Length: 159
Image: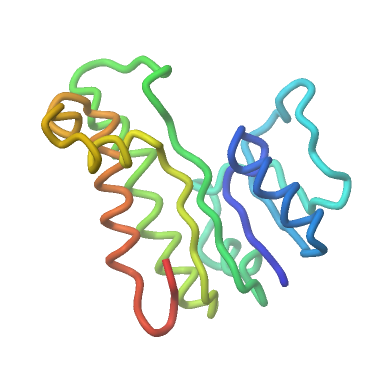
């Protein structure tokens, strides 16, 4: 199986890429340069050090060609500081690109999409009384990211 990953040198994306390769799959990964120091990137990964946001739709479709699975493991979290309103930054990096990428994944015929967001989405569902969605712009962005992703799920693509 061919897998296309955005964010394949980060904590979650790298683990996913290495697991897919270990299981015998072919992985193409787009990641921001430079490769993090000490990151155990498999030499079998087709690693492309480019910002997906700067690529054209045609370029992205060429990377997605013949892939069965798309993994989005990119975005920013609460460790990155921003000027208020901070939600705008989370929207720009966690939600906005996902809509574009999922549209392209469908166009490329990708059948499965996996969004590696945040465990905080689980906590929000488990303990709604904590008001995590309401009180954290980061958590709100990850919950809205998951909602956006699910809106793409249909008979053509399983998200």
